[in-house]
Length: 113
Image (cartoon, rainbow, N blue to C red; front, side, top):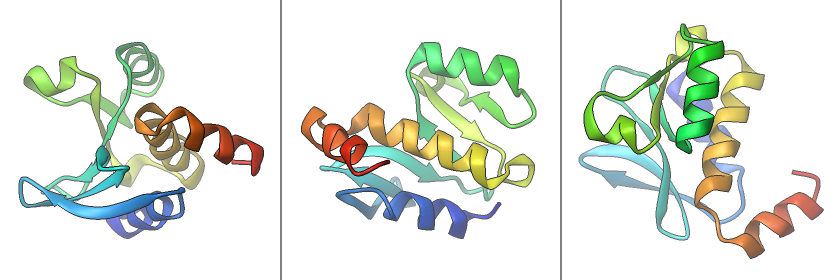
């Protein structure tokens, strides 16, 4: 997968927009960052700590906590070279759901998301 795949998947989600965060492209829902593109060509997604532990434990070649305090808050690196469409989409949609307001999540679920 590529950064363009991250962009495509993220921007397909309701109310998602692309902006910039610390000079890097980021993706937001209602101005809350749910994913970024890292300088190394990989992606970073906002998971809960439980979600992060689960994916990093089950697929360590694909998911790693970001270094430092950001990683302790659930920010998780996605190694795009190791990802397939289903894994990347799942990570980005999960991050979006974590940051989206309840009403937007419910509308997404009703629409078959």
